Image 1: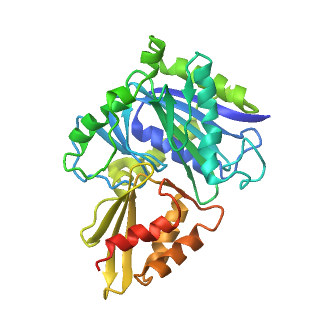
Image 2 (image 1 turned 90 degrees about the vertical axis):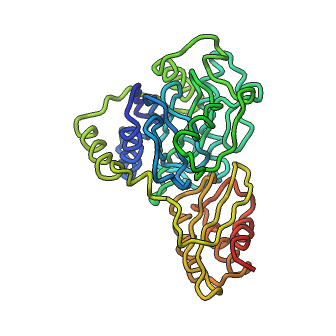
Image 3 (image 1 turned 60 degrees about the vertical axis):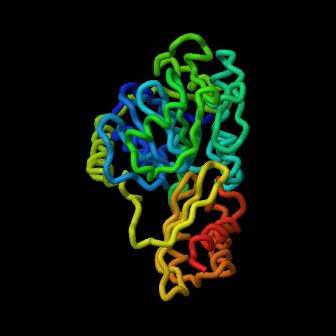
Length: 354
């Protein structure tokens, strides 16, 4: 039986939450024989907007809404008070299913690990459904959003945000305050298309109560035991050091911002929202530099490889497609939410002047 460290953190500072995710990803490069992974349930204070890994961040933000960036890709989401975060860190993407990391395809990862959340909701008689892609719904109204990252060592971080006492229709209000220039593109979810646990259950649950449901859900759905875990002094020091050196000063948030030198741009509709290409050309014949942004879900090493390989690639569809196809032919690499791999070359060519 797998043993997961089970950590519950109400009223957590967002920078420490992100630092905890980064810390446990690193710790699971060398998992101990006592720990198969970490299931962390948390809530952050205040009003917050959390960007996906690949969104461009606005450089100037307003203090009324905290702006953060999570480890995984996907959509921009409301966060903070009234929402519960779930982080499941595992040694590899199939860890609770098989010893073979590649035994499940990337498009199956969210389908597998969302089942613990679905089971948790079913214990309180909620008719939850995972229709695919990145949403959890109740009667076709969005209750939760999911995503995941696989790091260079193959360690998985599955992430979810569950609307507990507030729903996802708050996104436009948060964007208006945190991003008045409209740098972050996002599909808006109307009030009648979203819901929350408090509305469905007609009762408010604390973070601890939601965490207990999730613990039971994951133990029921998988062959795991969730053991309550209090951070040790060394873990706390490591997480605080991570927050100081990797996150403070907006280093993590501003790792992806608009760059004026990438003057050739295109934005295409995707399965999760938008897929944006920003590039510069060398002699109008080669790609000098390129950055992707938007709502897609991908392993960050694969995206870095793709951006690196496309530099000095001939600016024509066949060469671009060959490069992207080669990168994503490797089973450890993936990009979800843009459709077929050929769509990458299609989007890049839209950014190249005729």
